[in-house]
Image 1 (spheres, rainbow, N blue to C red):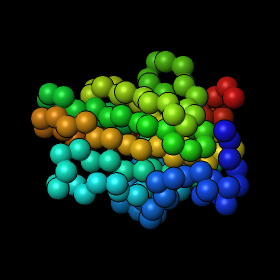
Image 2 (image 1 turned 45 degrees about the vertical axis):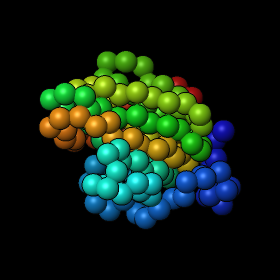
Image 3 (image 1 turned 30 degrees about the vertical axis):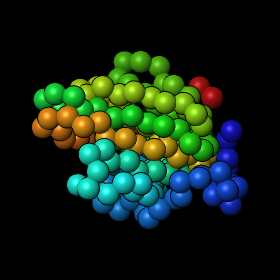
Length: 146
């Protein structure tokens, strides 16, 4: 369900908006927010609720790993997009789970007229890292089919 009203979205966003995602702001177009659900280093799996304002998306990126690794997205509120390089964008809605293997170039974010949140799960692996790449340009984003 598309949610353009922040007040309505806050009622649906059951894991909470969290704080402005300033540490990674350079890799996003628009504003995002991060609410850690587990504590890094104290739990073997890091989970965080990531909230995107309408039109916000992260840059293309790759989760690198020597073994294992990757990311899971568990969509929880609003509507968004997920796209792998060379493939058509996938419309995201609450209840959907996206599995992203290590080494796959992709991006994700909100639709232009909806707030969106997902739980990001960092899949454990050996020698994991995140490689941030170029932004998703406005032309590519605007051309996505609703």
